Image (cartoon, one colour):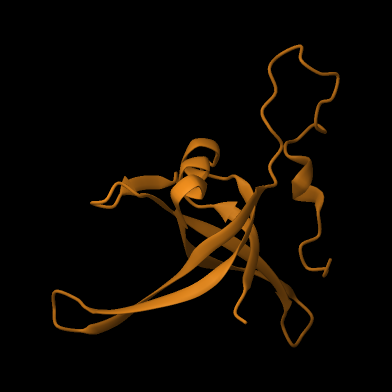
Length: 134
């Protein structure tokens, strides 16, 4: 069994295209932050980027509701494609084929629609310590 699980933020707006048969496909990137410690105990934060591909109904949902910076849960499978670039170099393209997606960013609220407001200073999800397993 092969399964990738990622929680991260979109790096740019999703791009939806259609196959010649009319099947929707949406591509986007997700940045996943990793916290590590150096041998001397200094905390470091590193970011890994993943190429995501969604098909059919999920492609349409991702294209409509996800935006740059959106926090998402992605579940999918890893796919590798080999190709030759314009200089004759063999290359490998790695992407995650989306199986499930869950939006983790709070929905924007219309003014006056609720008494809830996030804490001052931005997104309340920023306070979550990503270095701890869940």
